[in-house]
Image 1 (cartoon, rainbow, N blue to C red):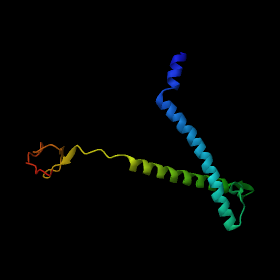
Image 2 (cartoon, helix red, strand yellow):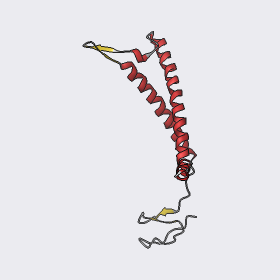
Image 3 (cartoon, rainbow, N blue to C red):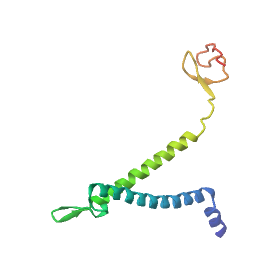
Image 4 (cartoon, rainbow, N blue to C red):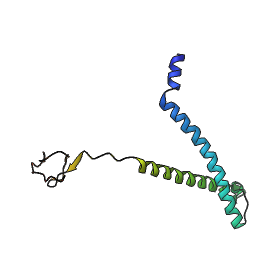
Length: 129
């Protein structure tokens, strides 16, 4: 049973997920600190409180903490923007595979690159190579 547990824990995907989770937690802490910096600048510009988490509206003697919501929205936007940039960079770095098919000039069906005659419409294909 211990051997099975060791194999489970040291399996490649699980280790990668654990590392990604730890990095995500650390990244979340960085984003929270960065959000505090951004919101402090906004507070300094508009002359309001430094901590947006303490901002509340009072409706019928019930405080509504819109500052915490504002902080969460800023955190979300920062994380979403950085993830967008990461995915965009990753997609740009991916090599597009060489095509293995082409489109028939006559019937527009997908055929092999090496084909000299379309198997669907039997048209003689022009050699474009």
